[in-house]
Length: 159
Image (cartoon, rainbow, N blue to C red):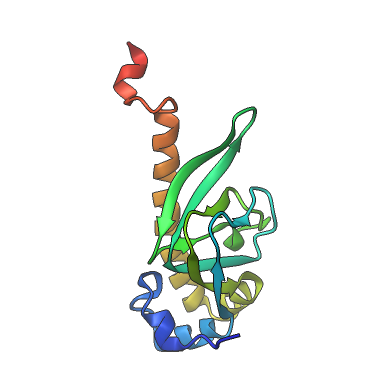
């Protein structure tokens, strides 16, 4: 396993501008990972024990629609965070994720990061603020999918 450096973390947009001591701490819970195309990273309802900062590749974030299969909510790519359910009890995935292309990321051990946040409330606050921005974006993407489930503009649904 290749050691993840503080400078590698500092270069990722999700962590850009974070204090060096916090990056040093987070590096202790990080590792480099790669996945091939069509690799299911996690499944809706599964244990959320990891999260990823994407370095390259694309991932479809999906939800299982009964009787229809997976519905892609959003595609996330280089520079983005994949996974937020690790931060909130009961630590179960709210969506699924599958790679659309070869994928490289910094993978974090979620229980270790939660422990770091509990020990250092400033780090916890900083990560929570950054994660909140991701949640707001994903919620907006989900909202847009629900507004136009047929793929038609919302205005045409009421004619």
